[in-house]
Amino acid sequence: PYVNADGVVTEQTIQKLDTVLERFKGRCFLNIDQGWDVLELVVEAVKRYDMQEQILLKSPPRTEYFKMVERYAPEYMYMPIIKDQDECSSILEQMDINYVGAELVFSEETAPVVADEYMNAMHDNGKMLWGNGIVYDYQVKLSAGHSDDRSILFGPEDGWGWLRKKGFDIIQTDWPGLLRQYLEAEEH
View 1 (cartoon, rainbow, N blue to C red):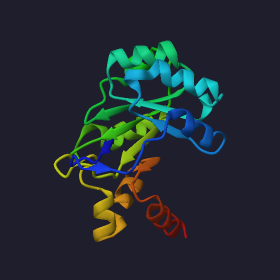
View 2 (view 1 turned 90 degrees about the horizontal axis):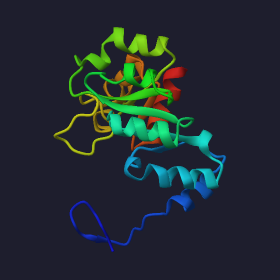
View 3 (view 1 turned 90 degrees about the vertical axis):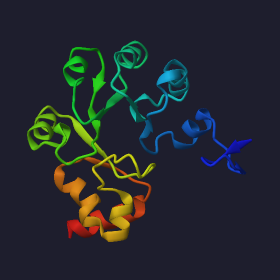
């Protein structure tokens, strides 16, 4: 049986990757950021459905993961999950990897990865920047507190709005409908 984070058995199940791929073929992009330990199997499944162009792979910025992506999935879109300071872009630029951008994780607004110079340089180099508004642990701030919770409880301007104005191309959220509503209102 499956259990929740608190150890209580749940009736929920987890879909097999093949089921997910079959369901979403041709419909959207799929972010796979927990597949680095089974990357070869993930790539085999994606190839069965001919969905390489729909897959975004993410991983922590470790050399062994970069080598796995280069070996098994060099044509797939790839983003490292960079915390506070980028020490991997120069390495990735030298590899046979479709390095499209980075998820930036930072606990403080002063982190090097959210400095205007860094973000502008990444954009000038054609890289997308991914900000994460999800709160999965109140002790760990993924975007210096500019979170889903802050957006919903105190207004989106200082949560999602801060991420948008800072220059993030993608904002990860557990509340896509509310984020979309906010972004559409900001456009008008």
